[in-house]
Amino acid sequence: MSATWTGSAWSCTMRLVVADDRALRPAHEDLVALLDRVDKAASRFRPDSELSGANARAGLPTPVSRLLVELVDAALGAAAATDGAVDPTLGQTLRELGYDRDIALLRASDVSPTSAVDSAAALAGAPPSVPTNDRAAGEARPGHRWSRIRLDRRAGLLTVPRGVELDLGATAKAWTADLAARTFADRYGTGVLVELGGDLAVAGPAGDGWRVRVAERAGGPGQVVTVRHGGVATSTTTLRTWQRDGQRRHHVIDPRSGQPTDGPWRTASVWAATGLEANMASTAALVLGADALAWLTQRGFAARLVAQDGSVTTTAGWPRPTDTSTAPAADTRAPTDPDATPEFDQVFRRQGHGATRATSPTPENVILAGAPS
Image (cartoon, rainbow, N blue to C red; front, side, top):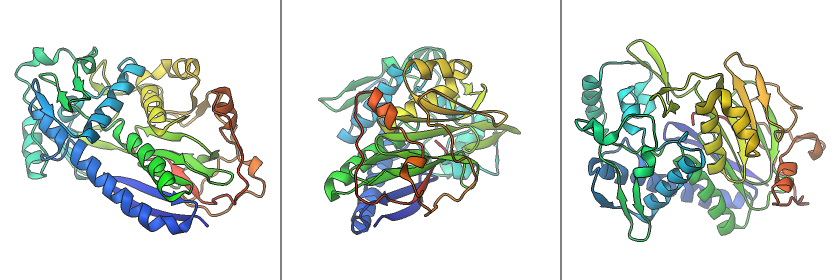
């Protein structure tokens, strides 16, 4: 019998679902410990994090843990795969736009100019902005600043370029979801689903798969699909927002302009072989705007895009919508026929992964895949 834990961390909803309810308690304890480790390693809002230390020593090699090496390596891989559309060097840009502390502390307040932002950040316990007197060292915003990051994986040394501040928010949640799902499935011998703020990963045996509602927000319209392998990520400009000088801002930044994306899509959901790959593609889709459909199609990504007017466009690999109703995030109603819920198996076969159907009972929870990401 499946069991679910739902909680909150990193200003996001977190979900852990296991196919065997006996694994829920130890897996939950493991997840809480992992989230704490990742936060201490990679949060740019903690002055005591390893990432804040490396940002403060920009231009100099900084010893870092194996965990941060893996997180930075994942971010660099996403940057390379998207030709810089997913860029981990936007920390300073986000600060200048007002995103200088946890999003929960920004809401319901109009962020004032940069000098006041740093004062408020200090009061909130966030590290001050990285000095940018040498703006030439950081170069203009457009370009591949991420390619100048130096990561010595064997020695555990990270060198952040001068004038640059790393922000791993675009990939860290998805990487952590992948690691958690894979580790817990192996450790406890059961099917596991982990969702961290819209980044979802599954691993291990789970009957006929996981029924996942893909939507922009809990209670909103969406589509239920079956996920047996890999991950689903939803990136949206509608939830992680704040005000600066009376203007609405959001956290998905176009590295070419240094401004929040303003293209035709407000939300992108992608299924891929891993949660990290899905997150990379969903973020890139919002940045690429009008070019997103061609980019996703050329790379074989199954995607669902929501336009600014709410209309939905999908790529060829996304299942046909058979359920687009509004429903709660957790719905214990299972379909009478597993084949009635659209799934991603055909995509897996085309990519050479194969697809098998287990005969054990199907976990019946419908998990919402859609949150600030």
